Image (cartoon, rainbow, N blue to C red; front, side, top):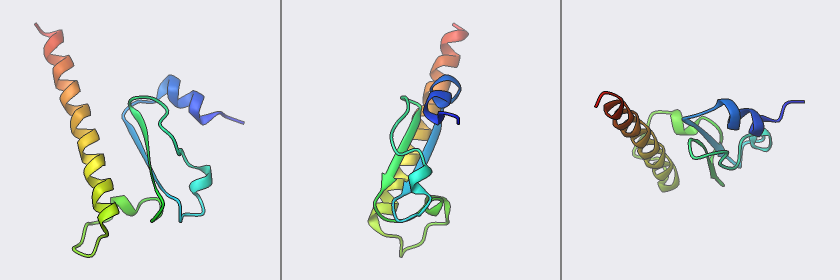
Length: 90
């Protein structure tokens, strides 16, 4: 059997795993950060993929917070990419 954590540490980067613990599949999910760029976000509410649905005015605060966290993480990755790129061409 594969050790997903070991594989992700060696070959993964810039991945966010969201798991809601109400999801029966969450037990097989990535529930803790593997590295600085392979990140797990776990919420007691919800289920996998709920963070990817269109937002509505009826979304609970925890889901709004998850989406903001994901957007901030991705924005930081993009910023780091451009910073690294600028460094290469100095």
